Image (cartoon, rainbow, N blue to C red; front, side, top):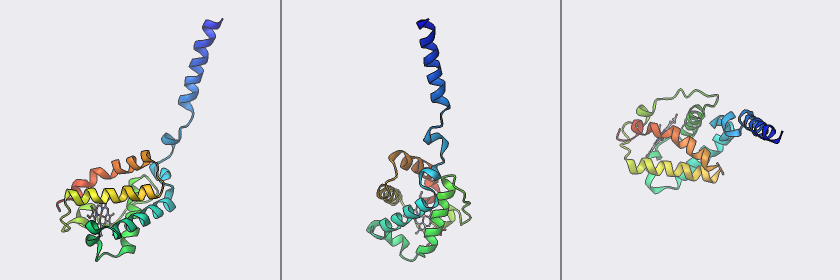
Length: 143
Ligand code: HEM
């Protein structure tokens, strides 16, 4: 009897595990980033990072902060599968003429990571967002 029961029990446990919704599979990246209010806090922290960074701030010296904030929030919402459609200019058009090099691109990524850290966003979620932004790199540097 025992020899039949044990495999059956293990089998049932495995089915139970695979069918129970796990947080990381069932929620979108947008939800993991705490939705719209989470993105707003994240972008505010990111803007603070940029404002305090000598290497990067000069790029934004003549930018309209409110416009950048709104556009960046909507873009992140779109990229993280949230309920937004970014309708601003594409990444190439926006960054053309800025002549951004790898070092400055990497620095901006670092500032975003600092902002995510400041907001207490888990490491795994940070990496998911970075993985979605990384493919945009060639649209942004050397333009
Ligand atoms: C994956 C990386 C990046 C993403 C996803 C990104 C995305 C964006 C977006 C969505 C906007 C437009 C906001 C709006 O609607 O006005 C924007 C604007 C801007 N970005 Fe980026 N960006 C990235 C990297 C960088 C880097 C590395 C720099 C400079 C070192 C930079 C400098 C700027 C500046 C200066 C503006 C404002 C332009 C203006 O004043 O109109 N970006 N970016």
